[in-house]
Image (cartoon, rainbow, N blue to C red):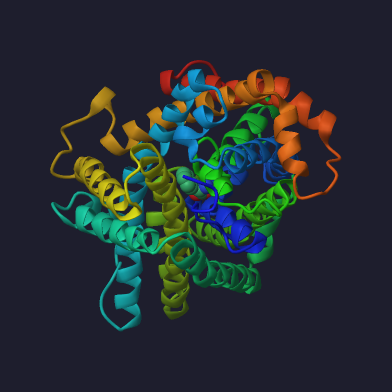
Length: 465
Ligand code: PHE
């Protein structure tokens, strides 16, 4: 697409908001608090902060600059940069969102279900009396998970069809401030509950005795940061391709990292103290209560909300509105990366591309949506379909990220990215840092994430996170 015809953000604030909206998602609300609780509270938070400002910043600058430089989505960017032999990398970076989006939308559908359940409870109806049973019977129901996923997909597709400025920007402008205000509101409410101090201490004070080896903390923080910043999914390349030349890539990247990290840390304040208090009442340890999987968001938290009485219904409702917005804005960004790739590659209209991606998402999503119910017997590699896709993508994303670093570091050359960073006229003070990071350190660190993921899958050694 020619430069003049390509959509663009209306300004640098709109771009930062869109990228932050993509980054802030279920990973911040759900996985960060869990990992912080598991890996020694403050120890994990400190390591995470350092990593996101170094590795996260480097990878983000690289992807955004690649997009803005090529003016293409990830699928066609490498050819447009004059390296058609690296086309395969564009294909890989497109496969990732194409396969993550369908099951991300299934989880989005679960959030829709909880949002409506709390809405009913606010209206005085019955709701989630038995959280464990509610969750288990919902995901195993014959049609409901599919219908909820389809509804979630319809909303994201509607936003995408309205375009970059009128759809994505406006949706973010409504949802992001509400999300932020609610997150702050819930965190303050939780902090004021009697006994919250204990949970906050548990979250913030470094606990070296429980965090295991520092290597594990670093690996856990790195994997989390990577997912949380929506890296290696083509999203930041596509979003960067809509960025104006007069805006600064490094400044935007710092802001995106800061916003994403802020919400991740804030989520810990919302979730950890209440779960710790609840566990203490039940005579359990805090760390054991904060479990890893869907249990935390869809079972443990509803139990905690129920224990707060009438106020808990309102807090639960607000919490699921917040989660819904976070999931929607992330799914929107993934859909956009798929739609833009299909548009750029097939040179078809945006509407046709949204339709094609929508049909793909619903068809592939159906397999995951039915995977705990009517098709529960179908278990690729012994896993429910949703978990199978998740595991495969957890392997593919670090491979894509490492290849992007190697491409930029050794083939395209870092100076081209640095030149793109200087385009708005500002000086770039991190040249040596960037070159060393992108050529050597980032690929190695990213490969370490890959190794730990493989260890986890095959249950090898003690390095799995
Ligand atoms: N970054 C998002 C989060 O933290 C997740 C995400 C994954 C977003 C894939 C877009 C694409 O939850």
